[in-house]
Image 1 (tube, rainbow, N blue to C red):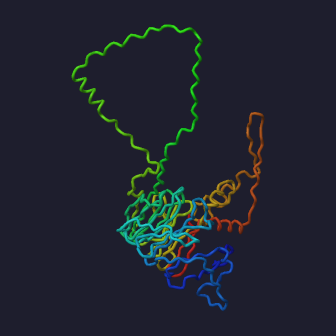
Image 2: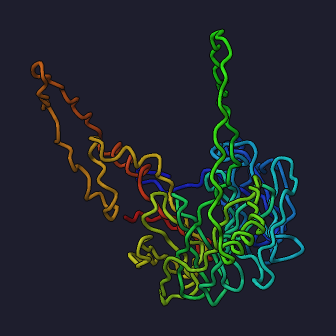
Image 3: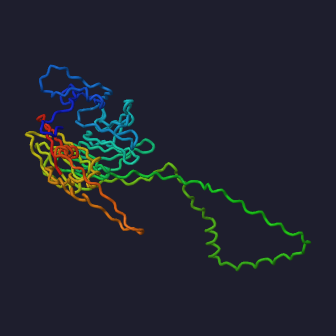
Length: 426
């Protein structure tokens, strides 16, 4: 992206799919190293030079009749996005309500998940690790949203199921903190759903590993001559019982003890299935898809069939901005990932603002003069300690503009007109 007034140019053009609308029933994978050798000419620009094609690594046969996009995650939790092995989830090629999970690079199908009989086609998917548990979120044609988790024995258990929409689910997205997910539909409803925590496994009782201490040996008695002992008198006879007392004691002695059930070491503590969403909101605007939550989890955006891009609060689901530039319907939206730079803000750097403005640079220079040439004195028990605060480095206007461009909360929207708009909001 150019920041010195020049028009933005694409870094590369990927021309992998030959069929229109990419409905060639194939899922492709490319590497980042190939990007430098790809063509940078727009598809409609006339050029005589050859357009290098990306090298295909893997291809999977998928079902594209339901317009459902794929989702992927690393094989092991915590391995990061650069993991060489990933899991890819797509709709099943035969049963439209089933879901397949493949492993790359082996291209082997590891799971086929069928979470219901009457949900219709799968419309949206999300696969991720919730802690150490592989979790699958799916949206269906009948407007239902389902959360399933993989158990220790390879079985999938439905942990959440709710039907908040009267039309098919068009998109869903999971929050960065993995505590909820949002769904949008062909109707005007946006729903906020909980993500249940994984069921803890009951551990079997551990044996007592503390070594037992043998009792001390009995003390030796002195060699005294034997003495004659008198036996103790016999105990007195018990008092006579009545007939009622004798009958009750006989019944109690004949009752068998209640057996204690054994502890199953393979059992798990299952929680009841949740069916209630956290919140629903009627936006009065039907046909919102490509729902995406920003990396800080504060707002989310949708692309509307009415050519509007709408921004909502993730906490209240209230509409906070409407972006209009395209002339026809919008079908894609995406936020820039700024999670890695948010932590650097507000730590004495200054000149950036708090990220809550409208993107026009009004927040620049906040706190810029704080601490310049000053010193901080700390009163200790043995005297005063003077700590000097380093002076902020002055940056040029161009460097400041480039920094704002790199760290801005950019929102990109794609429309049916073939154009991509770029917005800086909140």
